[in-house]
Amino acid sequence: DRLFSLKVYQCTQLITGADLQHGYDSHCSPCKKELIIFRSDFILPQYIVHYKLNAGEFKYTPNGITKEAIQKKLAKIGKLYKKAVTTKDNPVFNGYKFAFIGQMVDTPLAIETLVKRFGGQVCKNEMGSSGKKSSKKAFHGYYGFSSYDAPTMIICSVAEIGATTPSAELQAYKNMGHQVFYREDFLYDSIIEGSVKPLEEYTHD
Image 1 (cartoon, rainbow, N blue to C red):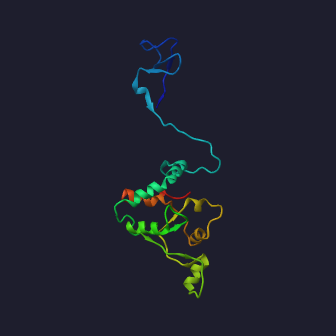
Image 2 (tube, rainbow, N blue to C red):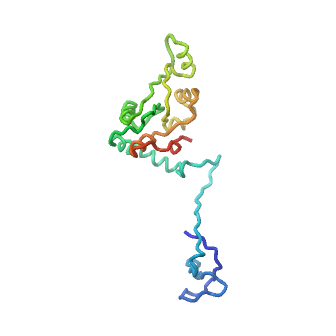
Image 3 (cartoon, rainbow, N blue to C red):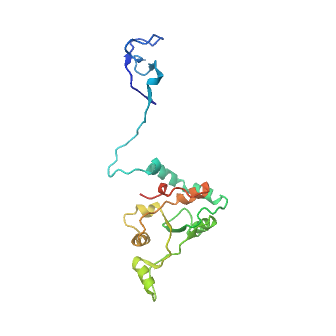
């Protein structure tokens, strides 16, 4: 698409190869659907902006990815997961220790196995508190954990993030100071690509 900043001559008959009219830069057909430009240097590039009305606060989406596109991708998360499972082992997640909140595409054991195959670790945090506690356990119990293994990254399901009331587990991590949570497709995309993908592309809003 192009933007024409021209002096347009409006033709009243079919364009049949007539010379450029004096004082004009281009000719336009009677139907106004065809434009003949005589000087190509007058063609200027432009951006086409598509927008829709939306209530609430404006937020940029990461790298131009729309929420609709993310939803479509997550609707096919099973296929992405299966592709990741069949990918050759590679220590993509060396140094990463993951915690998971909510239901992932497969069982916790299967997800943990996949993460370990690609060099990562999985935290073994337990909710609730019971029995005799040391001062350290009492501190963690105050925030909701009976034992606490600090993660470097927390993967959270869309359902958990979107819930009206956060689950006890999600709230416990927030109480411990964690404020940024990521979608599970980060794992599968990174595995398939063979390198850790940019984190900002996978943060929950």
